[in-house]
Image 1 (tube, rainbow, N blue to C red):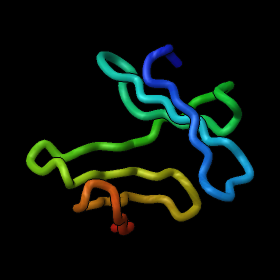
Image 2 (image 1 turned 90 degrees about the vertical axis):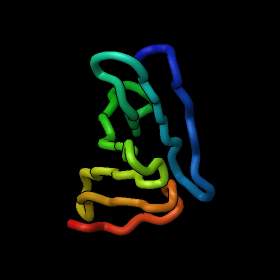
Image 3 (image 1 turned 30 degrees about the vertical axis):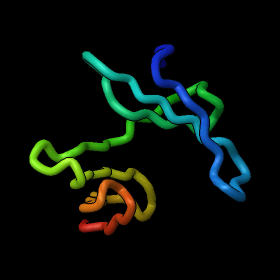
Length: 81
């Protein structure tokens, strides 16, 4: 990934560290996630509504994945498909 916006987060009680990277401006922009210390990265489908900045969408690729919208800036999510 690039050098800009890289950060590392560990959830409380987590057994592994989660790497997140935000790449802004130009081709390949977006939010990325790594579960192997940054060796590989997966693009996360996240979008904020242009009409309402509290409306956020996340497309999750997992066993219980799908489209998850939030109307409160990401405090609460509900799967819609």
